[in-house]
Image 1 (cartoon, chains in turn brown, cyan):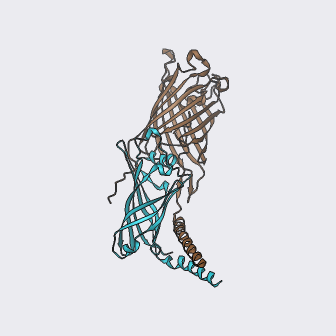
Image 2: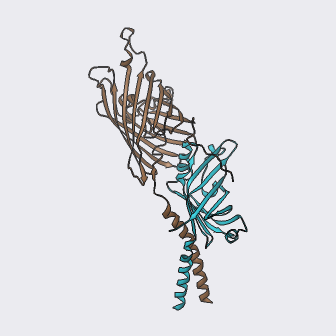
Image 3: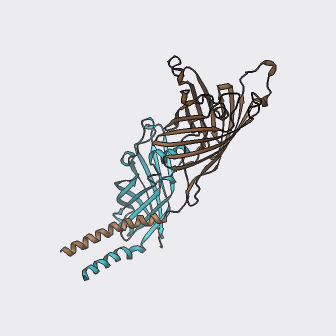
Length: 299
Length: 182
């Protein structure tokens, strides 16, 4: 009787083993494939500057950004909220790897156009690659009439060019780091000692706090700053909050501008003296084209 | 001692002799569909792995969450990042038993009753599925659908999109198995 019991237990055991065995067979049959790392950053911006992320093909994003006045202005200015710079922009994914954008900033009445190309993608699996690399180029045109009528500058004098190589690695589900070598060319300068070519190095990171929130930080170090103004390096900390089709980014930064040539090379406020600006980026995403059509199957 | 050897052989035979009777696919199809008055969400996966052992009536199915494709690219990212957390839980599994396989193989029935357990996001729940069975030459095709309650698998839907995502998702499958020779 006892032996029969053992036999039954063992047969039951082999049944369980068998079910597991089937799953094990499937496990071994899963083809090795190349898997691209997604969501290194949630938005196309880390805070002020661009991240390696693009909007995918057919996605149109309407982006509204604000940077308020200095918090250190105190209660009279409601901690800076009385004044604000705004940039609004339309940004669009031409392909999964190329996106373009057009924006207008109230600061110096600036127009900007950019193109960003996702050159290399971090991947795991069959073909491994440790980094994501994007190339970024923008042209900015200042249209503020801050000159005397007789000194009217020509069109080219008011152009600025920014070129960046964005290099990022998602180290884990919750941590991504980016470095951003930057070259800014200024067609015209205020005084002869100001450099026409400004070089800077940006660093940025994202730390995921929960499924829908992350803590971001960003710092741009300028190697040859302008001398006509008392400029500092741009530092920003912020949070990303994601809800469905929106990403909200709230930040504190010593920069009050939102285009590369301005916040990287023209920031004058000192973060550690309390000259901090509160700000936000809000985006609304529209799917202009479906990335794939799924026809329901009939059973 | 002799008895133990006997048991050993029973175990060995039990697991190995029937090993020839497996049917397998790695291009199975599973889609899911969430319907609400606000929005319909569809996704499909054409790389589903499935295996049937007709000697034991057992079936196992596995798929990679990241292989689900959506109509909207951003939805796919949200699905993987926020809802099913496929970085942490890359796979969904089903393993179970076809209760009336003998009847079906004898041609007396075309609807399989499958009892088993479904694992999504590391959570395993029992589930019963009815499936059409089509046997042609040497292929066995299972076709059917079942409902999954997202709350059962710790998939949290934030209040702001609660009207866009159904509480119960319809999962459809077409799994065409071929003899497995390995």
